[in-house]
Length: 355
Picture (cartoon, one colour):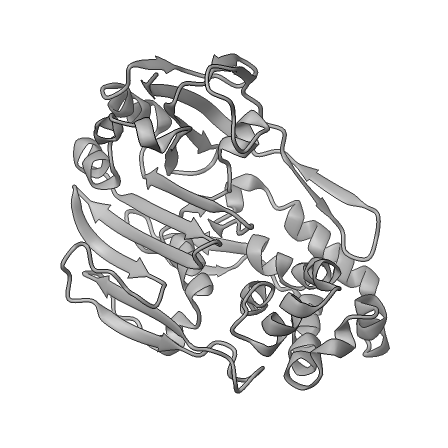
């Protein structure tokens, strides 16, 4: 599928991105173009080789109308992006797109079972998570050794939020469990050294672990893979390319939008792996490669964080919150219909690291 449109929505390095920034129609345009790429986000599956760390990652099913929509929009972006603004639905319909078939494809993608999803559920967010290929019981037991207090299976339970805390959870049908932590006041944090990092969890559990960072504010996509506590793959998708692990990284210059806008800015990324060799053509773009790598690791980041579980991005210190699993609501393009999909969670555990 065509993933390149995903980052066009907010990429100011392209002509479209620059147009969106100054356009009064920015919100409507972003909302319309989002649906062009939504199947690419949710419609990815993996066929795995038993016991392998990296697996073959393939599309779960054909999305013919989605491919046609992508082709039409790419041509418009290359020639006259403003033409898409007045009425995207009419623009596509005039060029032979079956809107109802397109809506059906989007709805099928949004209803994809959570157990089959792989890659990254991209959204406007800043997050850092650790994924460990381990059952949640085993991961939580290791994290609990470093926590002041632990509560298991907290969905629908009230939790008093301390300054430094974390959650661990696992999706049904997935081999990887996910851990993340948050602080309400970084200036008074003294116990972050007690929070286990990806390499430590990998070593303690004897399993692969992934440190994954997504920052829309900083335009960053990065990950590091650890096996038995040792780094085995590293990717950092920003211009400065820091090398905190002192690895012989290779620098890549990517031009994912050159066919759309010859003036588009290039992307810079750094990569090193003990498992595989990657070319710039295979990498395509920072966002696509990050999600593709997660898929090839048979892993999935569902974008479940503090805001999702607590219903508030910045909770108040000492306040009680009910931990929830409300699901995600998406609107079908060019209609009032919505899809409400609730992740099937094995469990959610809570950890207190500092008052």
